[in-house]
Length: 255
Image 1 (cartoon, rainbow, N blue to C red):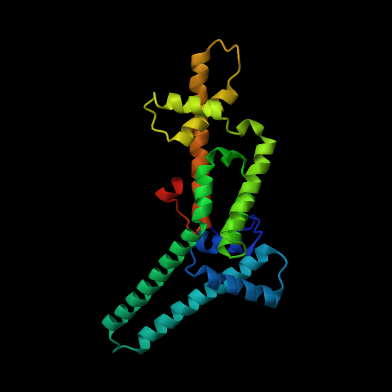
Image 2: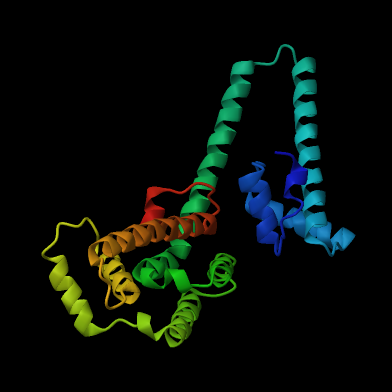
């Protein structure tokens, strides 16, 4: 895919540009270093359009890659008697150190956002109503130390309260929760309590009285709900992966 293929995308922040260059275009650079480059370009050229800032940054990264390659070729041609085994050992050590730093950075990032991940896991029934842009902003602010864990969770609870006010039918009711748990004990469904509750909740809210062909309708509901659940689960997992600067979903993102 050519770089021009991305020209139609709207980049609203430096984080969008960083994600594009590292996770989509596979440039090997630390996010903090890339952010400093973007800020320096912005200070020098004062670019108002984000896509121009992206193009300037990409051009600098490509030039740096070319210079590194050219320098490597020149060094190899002039140092014919250089100890290559020693060189490879030094490169391996540098690569290992960089990889270890990246892993440590990612681990620290995941620990930082874990309270938000736990909150979302405990409120899966709200996922269809959560504002993705709002959630992404909260994650970004927490990663940048703009807000604390307590402030981030307070924002989520406020968001949850506004959702419940707009959708009172999704406010848990003790009576039907007890009935659902009672029914769940009689089944062999491989669903945890929260997912089972969501499944029954969706069926109840989609059920209309006086249905003659009740059994086929239930099967249709189950199919629709299952598909929606899978889609929402992977969307949520994708958000969690992006929040820690990963471009692949891991099993832990699905819990």
